[in-house]
Image 1 (cartoon, rainbow, N blue to C red):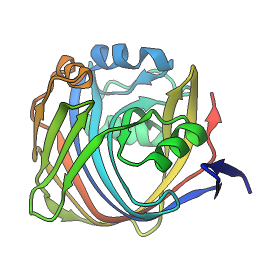
Image 2 (cartoon, rainbow, N blue to C red; image 1 turned 90 degrees about the horizontal axis):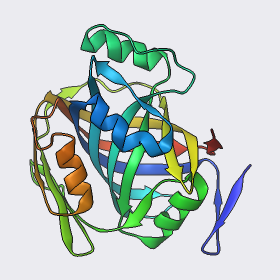
Image 3 (cartoon, rainbow, N blue to C red; image 1 turned 120 degrees about the vertical axis):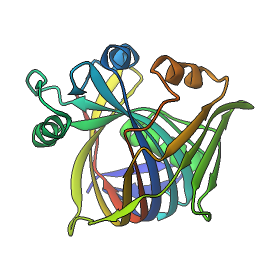
Length: 245
C-alpha cells in the first residue's frame, strides 16, 4: 500500500473522505476560450456541443476525511482523455453519454482550500493546484452560498439553489480527475458515493470580483445562466495514486 509522509503524518492510499457536502454549477463556455485556459496542461477540452465546452464551479465542505475537515472551491473543465478520438458532433445528451463511455474526466484548473495540511497533501500527492484562500461557506439556508477571497480580493460570490431530488447510484461512481503542477500533468483515479442528490437547470447566481481568476472566468463568458446546478447532501470519496501522463 502506497504511503506519503505529510507534515509528519503518514497518509495511506487511497485517501478517503467519509462525509462531504458538495454544491456545483456547470456552464457552457466557448471551447476555444477553454482551450486557451488549459493550454499549459497539454489536455483538450471536451466539446459537449460543437464549439462549446463545460466549465464547473464547485464548493465542498469536507466534514470528515483522512485530510481532516476543510473547505474547498474548484474551477474544473471536462476534458477528453488523451487516448480518445476526435470529438463527436451530436446533441448534448448524446455527446455527454459518449464522453462518459470514453472515460472523460475533469481537469482541476484552480483549487483553493482553507487549511494547510490538505494544501500540502493535495499538491505533493496528486499535483492538485491547491492554494490557501478565505472560503466562506453558508450551507444552512435553502440557498447554498460560497464567497471566495484571495489575498484580500474578492474572487467570486456563488449562490446555488437546490433543485429536484434525483436518484443516486447504488454503488461508488468511478471517474478520473486531472491535474497539472510543476510541469507534470497527472491522472488521478477518483470515486464518489453520493447521497441526497438534487439537480436543476440553471439555478445559480455568480458575482465576480477583481481577482485574476475572476477576470479569467469573465473571459470565459461568466456571469451567465448555468446549464445546471447540483447539490449533494452527503458523499463519500476515495482518491487513488496519481499517474504522470
